Length: 304
Image 1: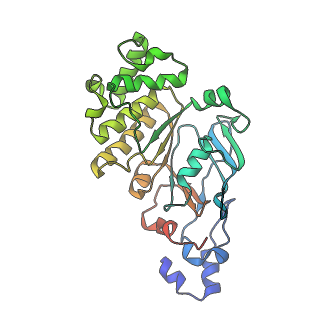
Image 2: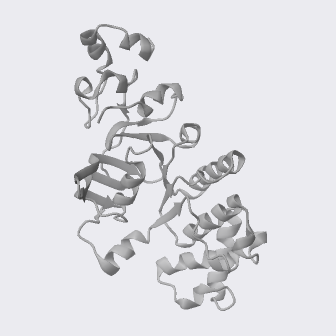
Image 3: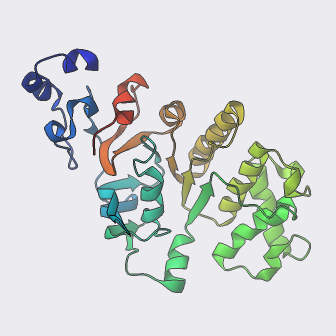
């Protein structure tokens, strides 16, 4: 039965027909509105916290205080991600995707909740201890944030700062040989070893994003957080970028958590989807067998 057929049923029957939620973060569909409801189970095969958990958040919330009152952008967000998984966080603009990712690493301080990175709580850490914990996570953002006047190799060397490398890693001309070799290997993994000596301001958008990925790999991370990594790229470069992420994860065992507004990318390259709507988790399931049409409800107005 199609969603439009359900919505044409009498109200009480429609609500009964679409109550298929079996997860811990179920939304009251009668309160939120039937137009938000899926026609498929929304919480299936979601892992709990166990010895393989790379990242877990419990009850994560974020509220901003403004002159006009408060604005809650995250509500009781909870999920666990196992090491080696490839997970996409999806949802409409303003649903809280990027905020949840940044709060999970305390790049934005959450208002409520608990965060565990490889079993270690993050909420009680600060200063050097927090930086050391976050060094296990490589960040790749939509903006590449390269030092444009420096070489590609020098930019990749900057990833070593997260491991405590000294100022010699600022430029390849004075960096230790072992660090230069490591940076060249990271460039080779993203297919850009032949551009090591080129200035960063002479790169295309896709090449710049690959350098940003190599810089993240230079940290020696166990997780990669990617926030809309293909959003500023043309369709072909964006597709290549997501294929590169997928290949790196398979070859190295890295855990990938990617925020994406592109459902085709999410379905093709993620093993699991976490969907947000109005700041709440409303979907957490494997991507196998799903189509873009199955997820159209995620992008409908909820009235929240």
